Length: 91
Image (cartoon, rainbow, N blue to C red; front, top):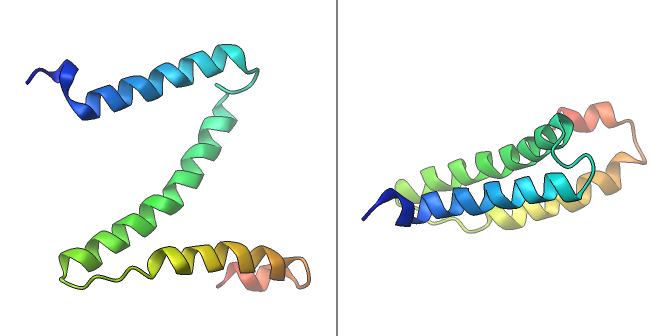
């Protein structure tokens, strides 16, 4: 199988193509700040996925990780506007 027909290469090529087209169509899409923001969002998901991978490799299957991330993503913003957010950042 050639590299041009491999799935990872095609995925990267499609994402790069969409990124280039969107950079020309939408003003500011290709800016450094936007790319940095996307990497920050992906880093959280990557850390959760790495932890889930270790759990599955160790022989345990814990599917509650997605539920915990969802509850955290919903509850922390609701709580943070009522209190001093410096205490929540430590959690």
